[in-house]
Length: 453
Image (cartoon, rainbow, N blue to C red; front, side):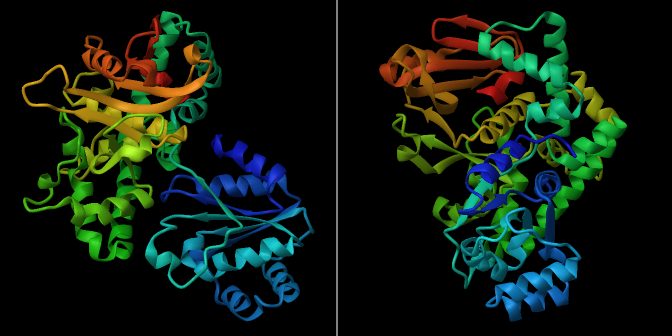
């Protein structure tokens, strides 16, 4: 199994809160939830039982339906069925794909209160109406989001643990890597953009170094997402499919705000709000919202009708961009990797940065303002996040993040924003293909350091 950052959070939960609450690991299909939770169960508990509700045997279903009010008998029968001896306070019970059987999720309240064992749930599409209808969501359940592998996890998978550590140190000290290591890190970053962070795709790449094989894996995942849309999106299914199909085209534009007219000429924001919500809740996309009056409370003035829609995994975006053909050959990927094929790299780079920021725990926000005839007031900032600011006694300020795929670029929007909002602004970051440089409160970082922000 690949090393995942979420494992540390599982350990923290076990050490501090496992007697008070169950943990729900929530994320899109195929991001590796079940694998990391089972590895955690094997390493950290004396015994464990994993109940997979996507393949729930009739006998186990009957235990839940008939014995849930008699926990002594319930545990005895579950233990006998799975042939695992449960040890009080030393065993973990995993409810895998819990959205498939809401009755078990509702039981969590009583299981945690009873206090005999620890409980971890995994789930996809966990908040979709169909999966919560008719049950009381337990307050004794803490949610932990999990996404595809971020760039650092990809480096670990590629055997580059030392380089990954040097990248973190470079950021902490704001000292550039030596040229040879910088080039190696940039090469890994470009590979990551093409492969993405879905564990199955990364595994195939580490085994074969064949992008064509990886593309086959990614297309299967995209097909799985399409099936989920048909099964679970209900009346929104056609609109969800329309948004999803238009994402590469929307992200390839200079102005990346999602334009609903690309889906349908008469589309209205209020009609599509639930479709964007569905995609966001399914964790298939990362929604980035425009902020109209930026302050440290970014969500307070976010505009639900003005959004950018990033693919949850950049590798999947690459395969989606070539969806007009049955397969994308290894040679095409290699031409992109070595910059021999013209493709809108800004689309991939910005999506990959959004993926890193989401993995780091940020809600995604951007700032866009256009005033006709007033160029000084018009500006676009790719991402806004809130970070502590050194020059304000570590009080939170808005940090601006601009993503520059090429080595030549301007920063006029950063200048305008700083001039307009002054004391609200903290450190400004420019992510670019070059090394680290610092000028006042503006820090230029190589793209491969997006994950450490």
